[in-house]
Length: 99
Length: 514
Image (cartoon, rainbow over all chains, first blue to last red; front, side, top):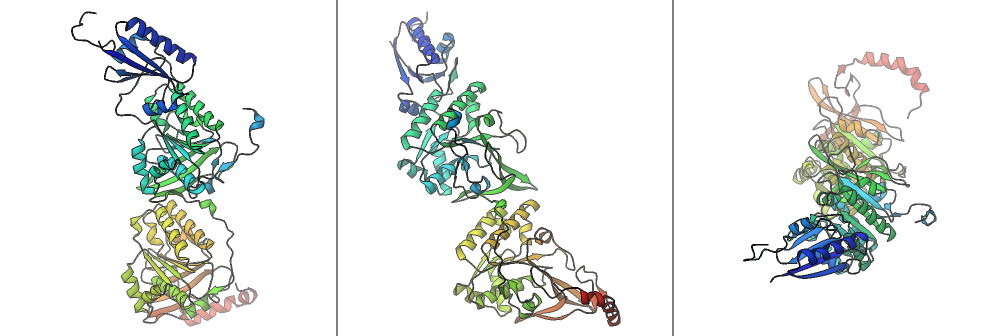
């Protein structure tokens, strides 16, 4: 079973970042419940170095590190279907054709 | 921010960009963001980088460079030619990059829902704090706006960044693209509202020649010079603005006379040239202009003065051979450090570059005499406007150094005539000497006259002069010929001359010579 690893960059606890976190939680809990989902939230105000390393401009930014390929989504993730398409999730698994 | 916190006057920060601090009346408004707008290739990035570089070099102020377009690696490499060792400055914590350039390893992020540029702001603030930066450059806005297409969001976020910079007390420049040289200030129409101050860089194509100009469009609440000024981008220096308005008519003028190198000419000029004056020698090809500049140089060497000759028409060898032919040893003068000859093809550089390098030469050699042979050769590599600016620029510089200058100018026609050069510079020169061919009884002779001699009486005759192995010799006035200056010669009989003299005798007595 493949692991899904996500990082969400936010800039402070704004309503927009709260919205993004809530949307992402819902995705993990409802859409990706069959998978092992690892979610890390990084506040760039507290840890700007992380934003520097990943060259993040906009917040919220979601990075999917695993499974490869890496993907990025900017915004408060308001449309869950779009987010899943953009991230190419859930991952395609051989033998698991029916879903 | 309350009103009381604003200082009552707007402080400025010296940029250290040569000439720019002059046209901006002391630099960029301190603690604010200035938009640098220009078309592609108008040296915006150079300006942004130089703003930081000269801060480091001249005032030991650290800077943050936010790049949206070129990668830091590209910038480090591209700016090296200007003598800016960014890599070293980075190690010394004087220069920090905030890399917001497009990344190759991740495909363009997809936008879903609302966003802000909070991460960028956090990175910028972090970078500023980490080196205690006083200057920030952002290059360029257009690159952000093409990637993040939500103009309203981007504008709001830029406001946020700019006000954060203000809060942190840093002075910033922000570059923005324009699509055309004249028209909208910037492409997206949002940039100019973000910045209090706007500077426009232009890269104009005039008569197939490129000309760069810089114009300060607005400085909210503070003064600056109006209009556009030429500038150039040169290796090892970067942007150099040529501040024509720096020309102040406050050069000291002395009554000290210096020799032109010819006793007869000195006498015609009422005792020689003034020490800090500009003399224009105009004549057709072969009338003796190069000889005039050569003797002018030689006469300096005789009095232990240093002379600098800019030659744009003849090669070094040619000049030296000519001088030998007139009994002047340029080679020895150079050996003794009394002369420097700079030979250049006018075509090798733009006039702006030429002006900068000539200034550098004068600064370095510190001559008492400068000659340019010929000014009109430079005319062909520039537009009329560019040429005029060049002449004004070099003249004011020479006058400021309080040295004597001699320019030669070639007239396009062999007989009579005038050149564009004269039209442009006759009013800024202090003296004008005309050399003309005179056709007399089927023979070509040379005539010389002092047309103007500011602040002194002078000989008004048109005198014959000849050139031989020992230089130039000025002889008697042409008495029985008129129309020399126009080239329409008329033989005049002695009786006629006498009659005309009688006619004006009364007036002559009353008039004061001068």
